[in-house]
Amino acid sequence: QVQLVESGGGLVQPGGSLRLSCAASGTIFSINTMGWYRQAPGKERELVATITSRNSTNYADSVKGRFTISRDNAENTLFLRMNNLKPEDTAVYYCNAEINSGWRRAYWGQGTQVTVSS
Image (cartoon, rainbow, N blue to C red; front, side, top):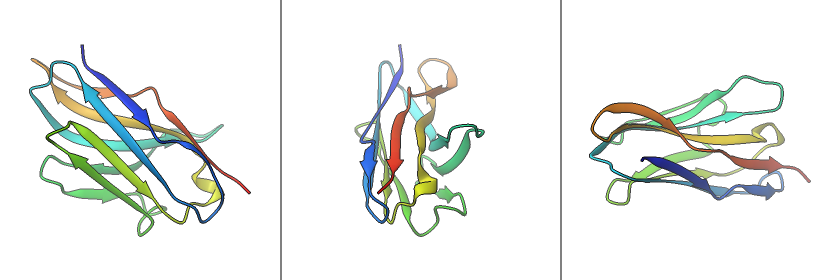
């Protein structure tokens, strides 16, 4: 059974930094595109950043220049480095990955809370 587990969320002051991690475990033959999404209270879930198996990245305009997505393919782990955090970045951050474990499908993590407040 494949699982995605996020970690690294927390409370940070505006201008601060956090690093999120997402570890995939279980029977995994390959992982294609991975990504981070976020959902603020009362809002739809939105894309933050994605990264392909060849390390091609894509970012939402609101985080360009502040967030960096990366992955460790050997460890099946996804990262999100978040710098210069703003109150509007407050949300639950979810990891998503397209995983081949015998059949290919998308998996979601349980989410990790990021709160930016003074």
